[in-house]
Amino acid sequence: MSEAANRDASNLIPLCETHAWEIDQTPQHFTADMLREWKKKQLAEYQTVQRSWTLTDAEVTDVVTVSFTTLEERLLGGIYAAAESARQEERRQRQRSLIADMVHAANSWTDTMQVLTISSARNGWKTRDIIEWVNTDSGRAMASNRELIKSNARKLRFETRHPDLLAALDAAETAMGNLEVYEPVWSGSPTKAEERTVIYRHLNHVKRLFLDLEQIGIKVLADPPPEGTP
Image (cartoon, rainbow, N blue to C red; front, side, top):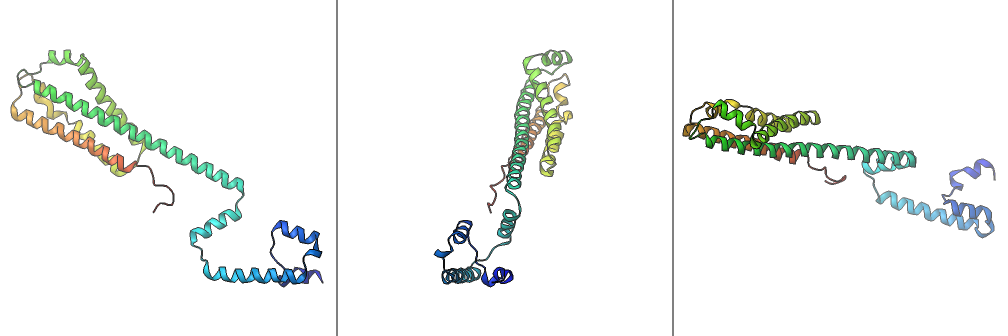
C-alpha cells in the first residue's frame, strides 16, 4: 500500500494512544476485518451523536478554550480571576464598613443633638455653656462622630462611582450639614416649642437619610451571585 493510500481517510481509524501502540506492536492480534468493524461502529456512533447532540455557543466557547489554551494558561487565568474576585470583595467590604460606621455615628450625633435641644427648653445655651460642654465626654464624642462622617464620606467617594450610592450619600451629608436649623438652640434664650418641633423633625429626617444610605449600600454592595446562577 502506498503512503498516500495508507494516510487516506478511508484507511484511518481514531484510536487512543494505548490501543494504537498495541496494534502497532502486535498486529497479529488485530485483523483487518476486526479494525474495519471497529471503524464501522465508530462511524455509526458518530452519526447518531451528531444528530442528537447540539452545543450551545457557551459550550462551543468552552470546548475551544480547553482545546486551544494550555493548562498553564488556564491555571493562570483562574488565578487571576480568583485574585480579581478577592479584590472586588475586599472593596465591597471596605465600603460596607464605611457606611455602617457613618450610620452609627449619625445616629449617635442626632441623639446627642436631640438631648441638647430638649435641654434648651428651660435654659438657653450661652457661649460659656457651649465652650464648657464641648470639652465634656459627650461634646468630644459628638465632634468625633461628625468628623468620622466627613472622613468616611470622602473615602466612600474614592471607592465607588455608583450613582445611587453617591446620591444617597450627598443627600445625607447635605441634611446633616444644615446647621441653620439648630440656631435657636445656641441663641442664648430658651427655645420655643415650635422651634424644637422643627429641629426634631429635621433630626429624624437626617436619621432616615442615613438609613436610606445603608439600605442602598446593602443592595448595591451585595455579594454577586455564583457564576452560572440565572
